[in-house]
Length: 193
View 1 (cartoon, rainbow, N blue to C red):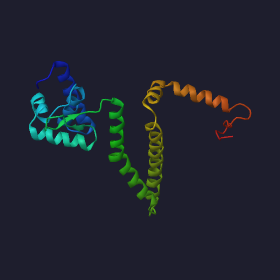
View 2 (view 1 turned 30 degrees about the vertical axis):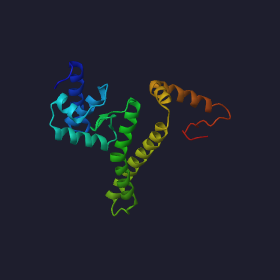
View 3 (view 1 turned 90 degrees about the horizontal axis):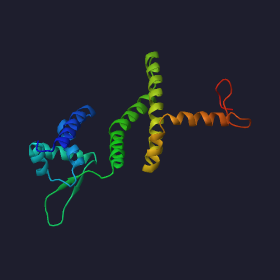
View 4 (view 1 turned 45 degrees about the horizontal axis):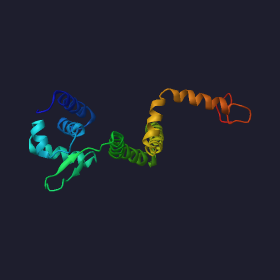
């Protein structure tokens, strides 16, 4: 690799982490290089800096483009293709989460819905459907939360993330407020009043 030591350490680490996230090491390293590069790079720039073959870089760029994680650009007076990542790290995270949801969560929900619509033929299948129903409910709940969160402006999202465990305190205050006479508190059995 023809990279400064700090950049090389980041690129190598990102390649290792990429393989744990389900992308190959080469794709992870290409993305890391583009992410820290101050200027858009051509495929030839990446070949020279990373020491990968041209075909590996081309395939990696195609995969990153399919995930909407890199942008193709053209510079005035230059016919070559240049690549970069979005400047806003929050946009990158939003894109990555949306793409993973489309590829992993949505198909799982579809399969669960299909299986839950079938009539169980045995006690074992009824039990399995009960467990699947719980999973379906949880995933739907998380998807609803995700839909709410993804519409938040970045500043609000940062505030939400920095709240951390303070959210628990806010919920406790809400519970106390609704427990006041005339409030919608819970009775001793835990039911809404």
